[in-house]
Length: 118
Length: 112
Image (cartoon, rainbow over the protein chains, first blue to last red):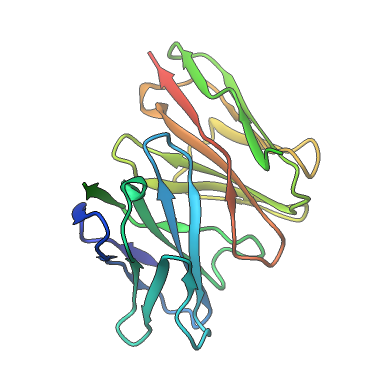
């Protein structure tokens, strides 16, 4: 069984500072993918970043980077130079290699509500 | 321009009714999904479907059924609605073999 844990229900960060959102996962499959999604108050789900289990380097997308520590089974999201518009709920998710067959179902964590302070 | 669209955006209905939520994607993707987000914001997969297989999460009541008239559509039918069905339902799609899923805007269902 796979599991995603986000231990921070809420986080605050000052504008222009960096913030790390924690995510740990549990899977016995060697092939898996890790994702971060952003959900602003308007409700849509916005894909941010992806890390494959075999990727050698940490994923980066603009101000977002994923701190992937495979041995620790953690995939923390780092947002640099926070902006007011970054205030949202952030979800970590995982797709494993086998249990979802040819369809790649995602399992989500409980989310972290990030508030950026001016 | 909309990649994954859902209708309606809001749905308010009485307990016991039958309702449908429509989902369409214009990305040419092969696989579509339905997720449920409850009042605590927890997101859970309900179904995934491509032209070869339907995978149903075992916790989904059989009152819920996905119907796919073609590759671009995966509609969600719900029979005998219950109060606990109130949630936001998200449709998503992906290319076969790709990990990235594109989500629709969500449908907020309220059962009275």
